[in-house]
Amino acid sequence: MKHLIIIGDGMADWHIPSLGGKTILENAYTPYMNKLAKEGCNGVLQTIPTGLPSGSDVANLSILGYNPHEVCDGRGPYEAQGLSINLQADDLILRCNLVSIDNSILKSHSADYITTEEADILIHYLQEYLGNEFVNFYTGKQYRHLLVIKGGHKDVNCTPPHDIISKSLYAYLPQAKEPSAKETARLIQDLILKSQRILKDHPLNKKRMKNGKMPANSIWPWGGGYLPQIKPFNSKFPQVKSGAIISAVDLIRGIGHSIGLQPIEVPGATGNYKTNYKNKVIATLDSLQDNDFVYLHIEASDESGHEGDIFLKQRTIEDLDSQIIGPIYETIKGWNTSVAIAVLPDHATPCECRSHTTDPVPFFIWHRDIIPDTVQRFDETSAYNGMYGTLKGDEFINEFMKE
Image (cartoon, rainbow, N blue to C red; front, side):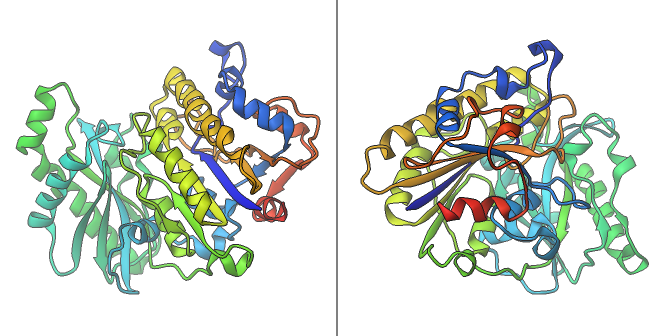
């Protein structure tokens, strides 16, 4: 049997008064997810262990069966793996967002969804004026980039920018957790402030503002750490001779690369609601033909949660159902080879708080021979009545890979 996990990033949410007390997932039209949940077995999963931040790095590593306390040193190193950057053991690797600020207030953690082509111009500009033998900037995708500090100290408290939207950036400047990290913290603070002066009058930002877009007028480094030491996925599950990972997000691709899953390039994949769903389906089905395990990650619902846009988030969930899960199911149900499918969010990104939370997330497991439980649809409430109950950490992947 082959195995496919489909992640709707940030898909889970809270009950919303304007939707009659429903969650967005409860309110959405999701016939395929409901069908597979009804024909499969359900539960909820605590993807964020106690004491850890509710980041996508923590959540996805947990889903894949790893203990984030042991292998999660920050998301930056995994994103670097996704970009195939040559790094050394003492390099401090940070995610570096391009963000939009107005009078020190963070307006957009994504620089108003700057394109990769635009961002590449600004990142090269920053490298020219701020880079040196110890400090280097690397272009990623859209607003997601990397800052590498040679010999940097990791014990610096850097707040994720999506957690401080509409707040003063200066109240959250990176701070050292211990005296030995003060020099690194001061360097990161200095880079942030200098980036604002450098980017303020860049012609690209003037053009963006003229076109009604917010400027990408600051950097915001966070999620720093060193290169991870992590065991391959097939050392945990020897039946997986080969595996693939499909995502537009460098973090997810990097996690896959680190554990021996082949990252698959998908033309038109963006990491937002304008992504090319058709090509993701094609890539997934092709990968299932060639591999024992495929991890498909869809980012759009997380981005809409950060925007606080209830109706856009519902649209992204319905798109996941109709444009991803539906076509995949309709194809594989005719295959001779059985495929087990699991669908779940990695974490919740409620529109009310516009940030990640530690709430348990719903999941279902389906394959053609599974004996279903009594759950009738896929949502945050119904999943609690599933046969799996509440799982933690690697319990989910262990159950899934039994199938």
